[in-house]
Image 1 (cartoon, chains in turn orange, green):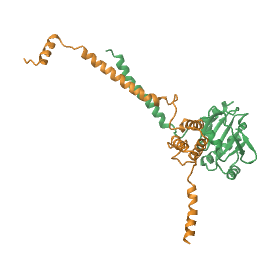
Image 2 (cartoon, chains in turn green, brown):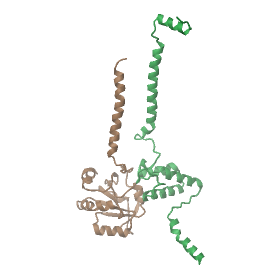
Image 3 (cartoon, one colour):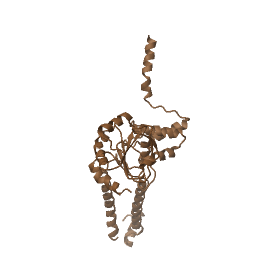
Image 4 (spheres, chains in turn brown, orange):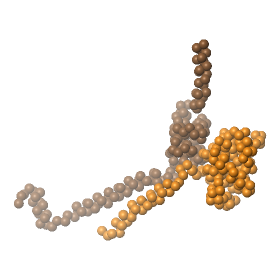
Length: 152
Length: 178
């Protein structure tokens, strides 16, 4: 009796397990690539969630599609291009350099160069001051006396 | 030192600040859930789909050629589609050619919906698995595409089509379609 109950309970749990998507891959590299892609691809329907984290129907579809493409032997770039051709660059968290995104790459460089320019101008001003001492010969002589340790 | 470079140095941060103000102010009113379609200027992707009413009838991308038309992506599970349906009926009555794409839906429910609410579509495609939807980059129903007579997608609107959207945004583009 107990065995039968156990058996029945175990049968009942099958639909619950089936609700979780289980993907079979040909090799471990494919699985790694799939995991990487689902973290890198962004769910277009959601605000700032990758397709691995989102349970939106669209994210499920994109996971399925990513799985199929990986299984076909497509590499990372091909899958990302496939998605970007349909959903735009919004779909990837690693967007390519385009005129619209160029500031993301050049912005920090711009600030570093700006800072360097400010530093350069300031140090040049300072050295310009120290190179031309504004002391008359009398002051110069006094300074040398002090430096030599002579007391008046 | 003369005064000119100093004035320039004062104005530069001000300029950067003002540019940032404009950029961020625009951001306040932009809707982050609206995405521009990646398919603008491209032909409708190739497909073969069943007709919603007659499973044995197949349609392909050639149905989008010949005249400017709308492609409306809808489903019975989509509340906003319900909201826009009356307006689509009105557009169809005004002579606008609309192709319906029933997206990831149940055929019987979809047919009942059109029977009850009226059918604004000249052709109804049945995309059970959302395959054409995926190729179109559909990310939320309803979506409405403006397609010219060459079958090229010229505009995509996400969200319901109502009088305001039609008059302000879609009609001016639709009128210019060749």
